[in-house]
Amino acid sequence: EAGVAQSPRYKIIEKRQSVAFWCNPISGHATLYWYQQILGQGPKLLIQFQNNGVVDDSQLPKDRFSAERLKGVDSTLKIQPAKLEDSAVYLCASSSSRNQAKQYFGPGTRLTVT
Amino acid sequence: AQSVTQPDIHITVSEGASLELRCNYSYGATPYLFWYVQSPGQGLQLLLKYFSGDTLVQGIKGFEAEFKRSQSSFNLRKPSVHWSDAAEYFCAVGASNNFNKFYFGSGTKLNVKP
Image 1 (cartoon, one colour):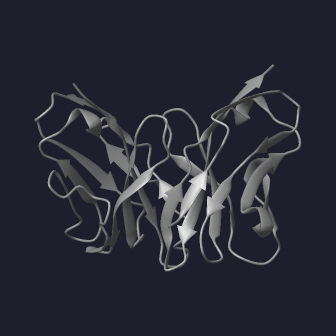
Image 2: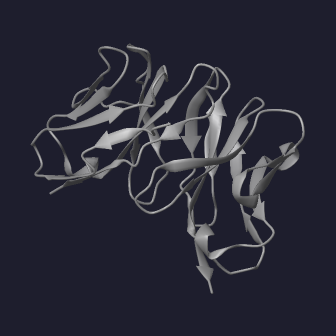
């Protein structure tokens, strides 16, 4: 089966600019996650979707970050405006209803904010 | 609150030697525990998980981990390391009320000497 797809793989922007990341989960996976992985740290969950509804966004900085999964399939994560501390790898993951504990991760998008 | 500590940032072992990566967690109830591996430029891959039952769990690629409740530990082991095992390893704990919400440790980077 095809894995989790993410694009772009790399992005460099200046602070105060906006950026968007796209994720296409494994077909049929109802749950989708966005993680932020800062260099030298483990991934931190930003937001979790179940189909097109938000399950948990408690760690999403809502003043600048937004995410949507309108049709319950692919998802977009946006940052506006970006700050230097947003430099990180943004990972998307998905899991199926039958085995929710097994998350499949995409390759990530490496964001550099200058 | 849940937390995960991986005390070793870097570990170097010789090919063929045994390996143990340490993981300590903090959680009030019975935890769900995971080990993931991340190769450069790739997403995280699940090595093994513990939910309940036998405290010694077997995973892929010859890895195993042992859950020790008294020590709040879930250390990862491999009897003979291969050069292809060089990667970064992350331990994670899942919340019991949303067990697919993971808290990751900061990772241990493994180098393998020929």
